Length: 144
Image (cartoon, rainbow, N blue to C red; front, top):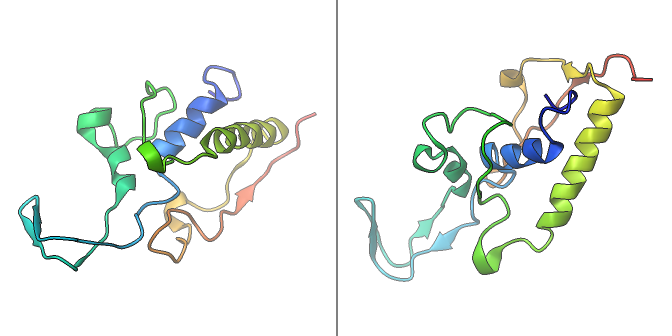
């Protein structure tokens, strides 16, 4: 759909950010007072690890197919770049870089595909991020 022009590269960037945000968790936070969250009691001083990347899969926000990657999805807001006063100042540049890089890559190698099944890609060894340690691909012939 990208190569044919049916969908803009910006749609692929936004859907990727929604579906699999590169940063998954806030660094550890600590409760400043006793609080109950969804039936779980958190005492003052206890660590809390919040997974904000999961919001991109929320069916109440993105519909019953929220867990499905779909670049034709109507774009809505996501938390990949934070929110409010903590919104990333570099977000517009990061989006533009993603669009330019994807367009250049897929224009040069339209037949590119994964060399191994996605389920076999080795995850990055970190609690905070979503990524793989490597992503071997078969480029195919270079476009002329």
